[in-house]
Length: 177
Image (cartoon, rainbow, N blue to C red):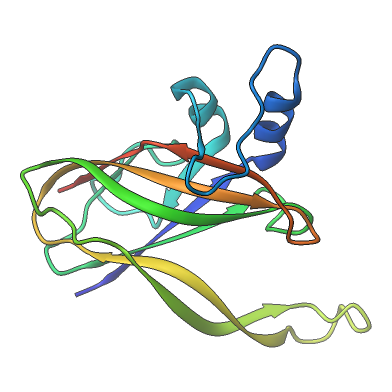
């Protein structure tokens, strides 16, 4: 069993700008009624990344073809382009729309992840990196079969005061092979 990390980078500023422009509907702030992103907007603003391996396809797009084995754990996390400094993005809800065959992955569960994150000390940038212990969340699912899953991920956009300023949803495809 391996852990396969999928980092989803979402350009939240472009999404907010798009919905603030004249002629576009308001963006939802209701987690139960997220605004669906069009295919075009999702492709411009959502970029899924995974460690390179043979068979990995569509790296950096809103759809990802991921070479994993049965029993591997897929772990999703999200950030915005500014690494959640200012506006931030939080993956919220996952729903399987279609699975061919059925049972390719189990329902993802929210799991806390604690680890060291290193950065340079601004008072001594020539010194060694300084570790900081952080706890964040990731969504994890287990690959149970090979095939294609179409699903929806909703996400919440919050400002630096943790006020919800948008809730969106898109429907990526994950090919497990």
